[in-house]
Length: 110
Image 1 (cartoon, one colour):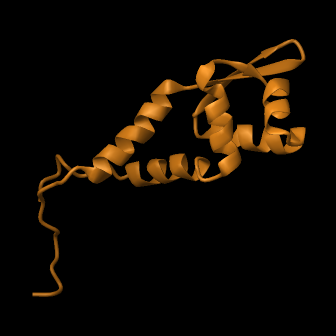
Image 2: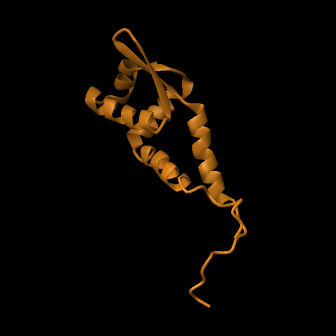
Image 3: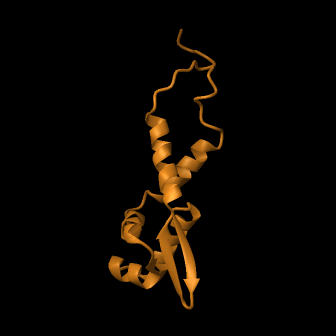
């Protein structure tokens, strides 16, 4: 079996966690809003027209998955995209699309 082309043991869990964070339409909208740079929570809330606790819930999910970074300035929190995590998610999909040549360790249908 060629181990060079296999994913590390933790890779499927990390990939799943990333895409779970992307599985909500509101979170996708947040990421789209952040494409043009850093924004204050109050701006995101106004643009999305959702309650602050719900926005906080979604932002926490994106922070935990490392899709956004944040900083506090006075009373306000400012959020920005983390390009390196977006690239990593892109690479996760690219790895799934890439053909590999390997032999499975056990064959049950021969």
